[in-house]
Image (cartoon, rainbow, N blue to C red; front, side):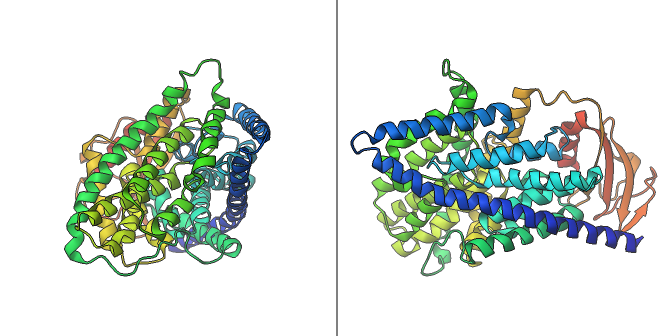
Length: 506
């Protein structure tokens, strides 16, 4: 039995490495096009002020909107970040044809994200990677469990290649997308993420994606400011969730303009900002570098916060292909800069520690909005290239997370997935059985309970228990232990009830 399990692990790792390589190539090309397309758009915005060049700019906006709109009309699931689609696919609540989505998301995403709209490449990269994994699984005719593992592996590879952060790529898929920490999923996600990261490093080099410099560590005597900043970020995080989730409803009130052409509104509003303040445009890499490069006046920082908040909501709400992953980090950095500079002006914090709080606030803001604190901590650690901020990162992430939780906030990507299900009636699936593996944690209510004593949801069948790599017959009198892996069979229509049960029990 052990030999067979080990062979299964090796096969999963090998398949995941292949998926990671192909996903890394596609996402690196996607990232390269966006990186080199943004300066072209910024040049066009600047040139539009001369003579009749504004007519040329109007023509470019019309053509890009037309191309992107037609691609969206033919495949609506290329809209937005793509992370909710991956999440619903892993749950068995959404079925997609991978190749038509893959090339359309690539083209439309590159056009719109490079335009200077405040959209991130990371969500689309996760979807692109997931589609690569799905294509690989279907070409190899893998079974359903392996299909899901390859989808998750590709998604992990996509984030890894987009950010140069393989550990965060694997953690995000488990913590936020799959909501599972099974061993096979971890091996699959990490293997593909490492392969994709190698590809991206060959293309873009070894330097950290967010190269924010700081002179020294934040002394413990200033840690009380982290508590206040966590509350500050949590409040803004909940506001961001509400505005982001409400923007599609606002766009639906626009008369006579089809949903797939709403990108024109984003482009027309970004245009004047591209003329007056081009430094704040884009996903957020340049903004984060700018914030960490020197000490800025409070009024300037407040302007960045307002501009990034409003334009991020407008850009994502338009429904064009693009995500909120990096824009959340950029807005978190701006909020951290505003908070730290305010504290410095009140003589509560020496100015040399402002970059420290900018770095820390990125993790806190992302943690509270996505409700993925572990991913936030690992992501910022990898992207900045330093381990020295682990404790402050954890403190702010936890406090901001708790604030959003207290205010009734849900993970943003879960909320977007639920919104998509309601809008497209994805909950009305034909009956189909599926399998899910959960691991009993030390805090689980099932520890030391007999199987018959657990109140299993209606329609859920416990098919096997794996303990120390050995399968045990799931008799009613079997006592469950910490570390046991339970394989559950269920109807896909009951997935929501099962998720609620798992969250409470395990």
